[in-house]
Length: 283
Image 1 (tube, rainbow, N blue to C red):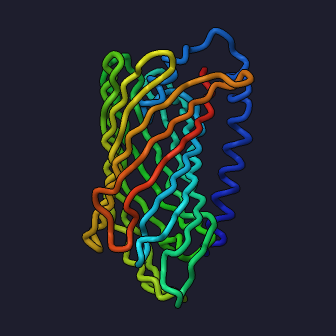
Image 2: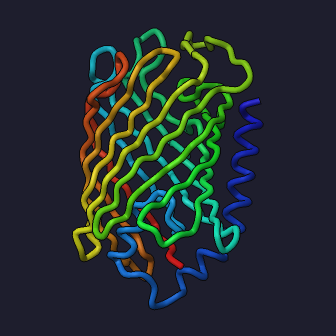
Image 3: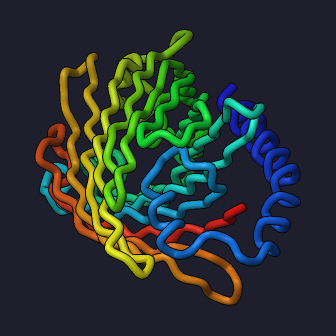
């Protein structure tokens, strides 16, 4: 069933890519578009009217039974706003993780694994407004697309998601949240004897960004996840600086910074770094 889910997801992703390519081509050809500062402010808004493709590299250290584990996650996160009418927009946000990890478990199981992880797909219905306060709500879906058992919850999931933010001059701040419950049944253990509780998790991401000028921004966020089944928090805190620039006619942004886990489950990571390259397609 999970192989079928992966095929279905990639078929849908291919369909979206075919439909969105004319939009990307058109937006890239337009002259006199937004400035680097304008794009920097829009990037701070998770539901801005801006087509973007963030490629987020996360390198985490200190996990595993000997605190020597390394985990690398590349999150490909296309954001596609769709204008429904003059008053409403639908923003699609997809997270496709590609994972490598080593030294995460005992010698009885494995040390090195890499592959595709489970996908999280969110949709936000957001009113089109000139107000400083912007919000969006909608559903979030958890798709068991992982190519490696250890990276998957082996379950489908669904729940609500929402975001509210304030864009006040050079400041942008707000919070993004969701809660996902698993649907259907799953085996509690797989061939590697990995405990798989039902999905019942809350995600909270408060964020803040300050546009310095010249396309530069500084900011930070906290990505807190609470697992209601295991009663455990995972809370990395991330500080960053970013720059919007043009390379060969392509608008893009480069962001980098450290992150520290103020709370993590047993054998979880202790600290890490993040580097994110985002392709921008302003209208």
